[in-house]
Length: 527
Image 1: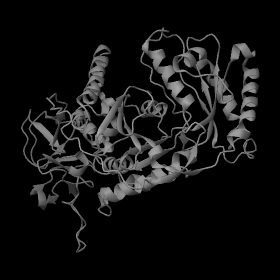
Image 2 (image 1 turned 90 degrees about the horizontal axis):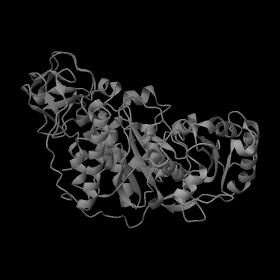
Image 3 (image 1 turned 180 degrees about the vertical axis):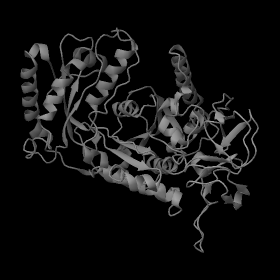
Image 4 (image 1 turned 90 degrees about the vertical axis):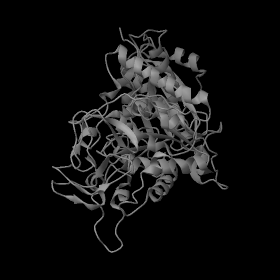
């Protein structure tokens, strides 16, 4: 049984007679807990569970439905989310004070749930930008990339000259240009030139240089850094041309001259960049990065499964979805290996998790340092619980490939990319791999954007939507409210993907998010 199919709210619909919906949500008949739909006070009776609440239960938190002895596993989604650290009585709050991480054996059952994907006969379309080499863009930017942190100020200065909120006249004659984006970072030097850290940074920068949402790119370096621009180009088969230019501060003669050179280069690129027109293209050209941040107890009930339903539609229409955040599938990876199209693909996923366990061990850390404080305040207790909800974003189709961070994604369908759980770092890898759209679920209210790829924000609950609507694109809380189904909201989400890919701005784009959120993954020692 697939995760989001198990999250039916059939036990708690709006009563046809107008009676209030149940104050709790049961996700599976075999679960030991139910989830509070709203804040519950001691003495609240829940007849359908034959239960009386003992003490205050915050919204999104768990209530025990039976007595659970200390040391016994606790189940949500019919999966283990931890063990009781003390005796828990029916009706009591189940959270960090009485539930802890547990190690348990998972049955990977490679390929057990593989099934044919039923493609649609007439794929949906969106209004995309077809590049001359066949790639399809959802946005039309000029990118300014720094090879090293030392050139960060310069690339920002070049891009700031063209900011519409500062100099509206700079791009006034170029309405088809979405903007000039500066992407700087904190690395690029003091790093082993033969090590994995530099290779990873170069792969990330090369991915952005090739990204279809950039009509042209300027690479700007200092000149003496370890991460030489020529080394990036050589490692990834890039060649300088009219649309890909490179120069350094030292060769150009200083900061002011380099900024002036960059501004002039952008002026030269703008007329051709502006000549693009949008045209109908197949939804198969969509590559969507899946993210969740600021998760809460409702994430695995509303927004994540709704996004999963949208992913199923995307895959049926020939598109690609990238699930990532490897530490946040820990404990739920067996639900993905069952969907791997081959044992080899499933084992590639397990190898990445093995790497993370070793990585954490040598750095004296553990994978259960996740969830965050905000996740816990929202009702999540262990990484096992968080992961089980997080994988719901991936829908139900086959896992067709596993990629390392920032590797080019070439497969169609549902794929996995190994990234950290930190959202900006994870999405940076996805965009480097080719994601031209991001869908980001949140229960606590994450504020995020990801230029050059637009990012859609999905709220898990109506209270968040009402409080922070200026940052949210879709209210999945309607599922919790009983006014919409997972499939209804999933269909709406898929249509929103098409609309956004066609040029409709997301809320994060309206606020100008995206440049500061470029965060390549630094994995090597800096000396």
